[in-house]
Image 1 (cartoon, one colour):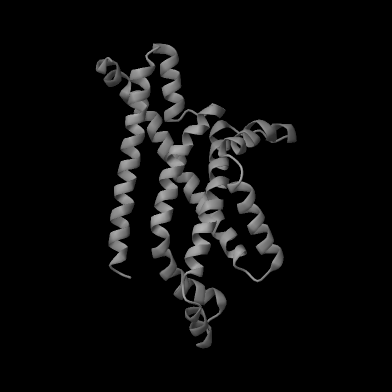
Image 2 (cartoon, helix red, strand yellow; image 1 turned 180 degrees about the vertical axis):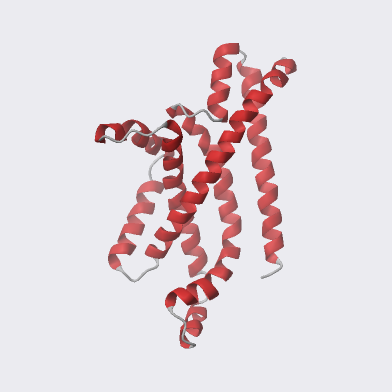
Length: 216
């Protein structure tokens, strides 16, 4: 194995790594917003909303992310909607992560004692006031660990977007391999960058969790 090759192409792979982080961060933000909506639908008393939320999480969590990406990128053009690789990647990752984040939020909210909501309502708060001022401030502390795990899992799963021509870290590695024919060095370098990213975010979320635990 030639370490000079790794060092030579590491800057190019690093650019792909930046794209991977940007893609993951954007997907998590959109997925969190969508997940919040689905989570509130899941705990609502409206049968239709609750049914939709359950169906959504069942469908998305029960099918592979790769299949979802293919349907969005290759399937939607048959319906007259063509997305760029980046847009399709963001849409696929966001839709997928929303199902998992919705379950995280739902579980965190329902883990709060029901007496908290009853007490808030008894002093005149509306449902949304009680939720935003009493329930969510307690629930979000319990969301941090699983949300951190979801972010890291999505960071690794984002490598699947290479299959729809999205130039992320994995796609960059594939392109470099095709031109250098040095799979050992290229893929080890890519793996090292993935490991570096996941380690960084694991430590970051761990510190955030410990910091927030002080306020519990």
